Length: 111
Length: 117
Image (cartoon, rainbow over all chains, first blue to last red):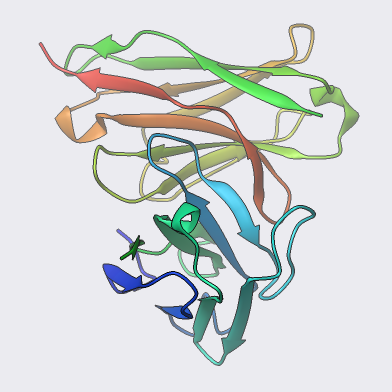
């Protein structure tokens, strides 16, 4: 049911920069904010980025978000072993009277 | 700091109704500061938003589940609940409750519900 498309996997070595894309449409990313969640193995998702590029208190500035048109990206700079997790983008979708949609998810592996 | 905890049966038979409760601590549902959402995640798969409720009882559901979902609130117990009817194996998932503003934060730890006879 996901209408936001992410690559299934991404990887990098410690210290590298990794970027995850999130592709949507005019009814979701194109007209609403994008959010990013990090899900460590066996745990609940945690808010990582809100309103396209804002970091909640406590989230390292190694994580950054951006949005352009109907796509968004999450960048992780200075990759660390504890960043190995699943990452999901999300946005409100104005179609079908409106509903929240999540991305397909990207598994980040630290080599 | 507000915390959420899901509870309910871990096994439901096909065609029956799944019922879960989310207990809120460290804050009051009646404050009116937030919406309260349910989200699910099938094993090994992605996230799906189910719907939300406001303390007044107003609700909003994912159109894909709307015909089977009921979310209710009990402000006296500081809880909100999910009922999903006519379940099938496809409804097997970890069910999370979460505070919903523009975003979801925080989340409960989640509870696995398996649909099986």
